[in-house]
Amino acid sequence: MSVDTPRRFRVEHLSDFRYEQPAQGSLMVLRLHPRADGGQHVANFSLEIDPAAAPIAFQDPFGNVCHLFNIHRSHEHTTVKSRAEVETAPAPDLPERLGGDAWAALTELAAPLRHWEFLAPSQFARSSPALEAFVEDKGLRRGGDPLSSLLELARVLHDAFRYEPGSTAVDSPIEHILETGSGVCQDYTHVTIAIARSWGIPSRYVSGYLHREGAPGEQTPEGASHAWAEFLLPDLGWFGIDPTNDTIADHRHVRIAVGRDYADAAPTRGAVFGGGESRLDVVVRVAEGGEPEPAIAPRAERPFLSDATPVPVVPQAGADQ
Image (cartoon, rainbow, N blue to C red; front, side, top):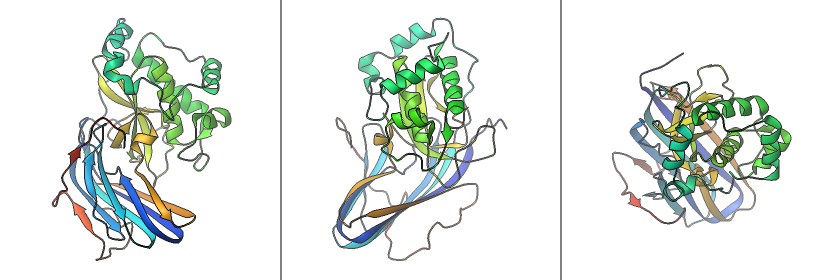
């Protein structure tokens, strides 16, 4: 179904960290606030943390709104719940292909000093012998123009890999999916980015959510975060392609954070002092229009952060968070 008008979604994201024994302290950075760019509008956002903590908002070098908090007392779990109401952008009106001089125009647009962070190899999106062998086996080459080359790349990866939840971890290198053929959205995305950068296309990782509508190719499960890639092309600017679901990013995609790869856009990152082994449960609900069902029962003692009581955003520059 083609959609040419914005759509509004309500999103809940619950991360529940449970520790084997009481932790003596913890520090965490959240990237859960949706982005307000690329045609996406954030109507409201709220954040709950248990045990009680006072988050500080800041902006990272990629323009993501982040929240930093710490807990300086013994605790057996950390629960973070965000709610957002977001108006997403419709799919871009893309041509079938770009003009014959598109590669030359891209070389000028993607001057290394201008977009170096999205052209250079990064922690999870980099070349390797396994990637080179995969590219050779699938006959992946730059085509007549950058746009058609990227769309063909997404199709090949969608057909070549099996989407298998639990087959990789958040820190799995791309060699895992290349050698086993199984992975999840972040693995598809890292491979796509690594190949596109080798073609000279500025490429960035996007974390967010997908509202499933039963469209052809959809294989991202409900109740999970999602990831896809964005590319900078002449005349088009930044636009997204979702190789996991073999589609361009459209009204179903809710953008949360961007970066060079997963390490820059992870929903939660932090450190725990003590606590032993930990378990993380994540629940995501994306609903169109009406209020989604509560992911956790409300508790009065949880601090509540909302756009109605904003925390100052302090821009950070020159260093990765």
